[in-house]
Image 1 (cartoon, rainbow, N blue to C red):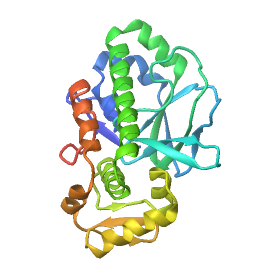
Image 2: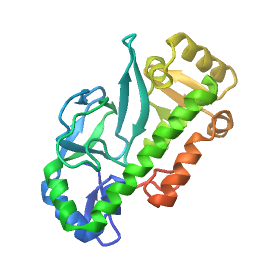
Image 3: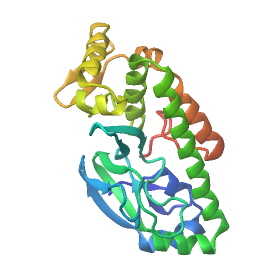
Length: 252
């Protein structure tokens, strides 16, 4: 399990949302936290499932929301890493899931029963506030993703997704994304993604390895990306300072 140490000396899972809680608020949920090692592709929720568990990705682990379309394809909407959680963030009770939620990149996850979180919220206004603020950030992330899909090119969005994955996987230059996975993130056919990747390779921006992408020139990649990641990060910083992963804020 990936552990990070807080300024108060208490060990916490390496999830920035959990690390942001005050010692008193964290103590309300700590006895009920479970730990697991998730694998890529593990299913957390299907549409219609009762949302009974909140899942907190830790370290480099990532979860993703997928929306099914009438042609049978799933389109990924947002990635959630150690900055947050998926499932029942602010709802009361066991509401049905709207999307499919799966593990994108494997790694450690912490899980918490919704009932235990709801009980803790009744005892602490500050705990309720943190999760409400995170829900606002997630909504902003979804709004930005909708606008990005409407107005930005495939090249810009490809660069954006790769950078977003890099930030959440400890800023490593090797990102475990395949052409097929990128196509799902972009909501386009694999041939479009392959064409963009080939262009980036010809320009010396990246290389491909089996099942992953090696970023050779991060600065050049940033120049090719839209500014949607920056807009989302700025909102996170204003609403929940220090939660969103950055290259300057890695855990130990």
